[in-house]
Amino acid sequence: MSRWFSFIHRFFKITHSQMKTYLLFVLLAIVLNGYGQKIPWKLSSPEAQEMSSLALSNGIKELQQTGTNIHSLLIVRNNHVVLDADFYPYRQQYAHDLASVTKSVMSLLIGIAIDKGFISSELDTVVNYFPEHTIKNNALKILTIKDLLNMASGFQCSLANGEQELEQMQNQTDWAEFMLDLPFSTKPGEKFSYCSGNFYLLAVILQRATKMKCHDFARKYLFDTLKFGPTYWEENKKGVNHGWGDLYLLPYDLAKIGFLLLQEGKWNQKQVVSAKWIQKIQALYPAKGTESYGYGWWFDSENPDEIQAIGRGGQRLFVLKDQHVVIVTTGGGFNAGEIDNLVVNAIAAYQPGENRYAELLQQLKLTRLPDTGGGRENNFSVSMLNKTFRLENNALEIAAFRFEKGRTDYYLILELDDGGKQKLAMGMGNRYVLSHEHLFGLPVALRSSWEKGKLLVDYNSLSGIDLYRFTFVFNKETVDFKAEDRTNKRNLFLKARVAN
Image (cartoon, rainbow, N blue to C red):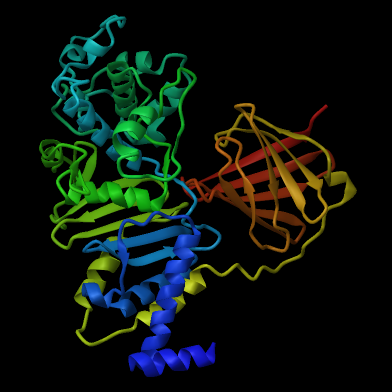
């Protein structure tokens, strides 16, 4: 290896420092190809795109030092990947739940359906697509698809109390019927009020208009055209995809969505979404403070160059039009709202002639290193194992749990309200170990340790938005179970009892 290095050094007349940077760059490309990514952009040092590697490296370091549960950070500028960071135990080949970023993708799907003639216009009234519905409020007669897209339906529905209308909707047999029967607090089209159920109605409308599930329509007219990797999308018992959330994409594929906005709806010179639809995506309704909303996307008057798609738990797509930048973040329970500032600062800090790319690549290597672990590995007694502990109804939708000893690890088995079951390696010794969730078989990571008689379990949904800290305190026939939901900022205290 040293002889080959010396040959390259002499032949190309480059410094050892430059050679080191080059080799690290090649290593990064090999790693990405190993992940099976079909990357449509070339790799580049930040400096080649007039950004500071040092500023990016410091930002990555701060995210790690503060224990932020970010899963990935991808930055593309001028059609070049300048930063691709995935944070252990997440890897870029894992499709990720986009949460409410899904709404922005739904907006594009509605636009494509109009472009293709499946829907005549966003000015179509909603009730046209629900002829079976009995209208109980005249305001419903003037409600349009556009009102739903702009979160201006007028329904008595909001973010208050944890989106209780969304929860109530999901407890009904007919979700669309529930939404259409909601009372109106304002006239349709008058005022913004965040209501995820609006986008469920859009999903039903798209399915009825196209005679295709939203996911199938998306694959045919959007995902396949942009050569997406694996995608998943949750649906309800009626076979309708959750139009407001629960779409899973690879981070690189979400970045492609951002480039559709940069390129007036084109991808590789093909018009995927009409420029007319893309131009309609603008700040239309004041939301909160300096923020506005329009056609499923977010805007901020403090950053007029920027468009955002925002999802709970750290899912973000930033599009900085004037800077020709697309940023994608995924994670569980972290605030991604300042990540765009990291990029803006890296652009401002750029100094011609400076090159700290090698340092950035070294920092990226550190983000992928496994945790060192620690803590006691085993304090299970025989009485704790192989017993099913049942829980009262709870927001986590966990019906019961049990602990089993395997050949190399202990396992936590979760029985869920939907009938699913997850058998999860616990990662004793406080080291993350991968398992898979029951819905799509996507990765979940657990690490566990004993502390003062309590069993502590970190549940990191690597393809999802959830981060939990479970605490189990064992009594004779009961278990005190505490769940810290770090994504939704809430704690649950439950009592589990041995099943008869």
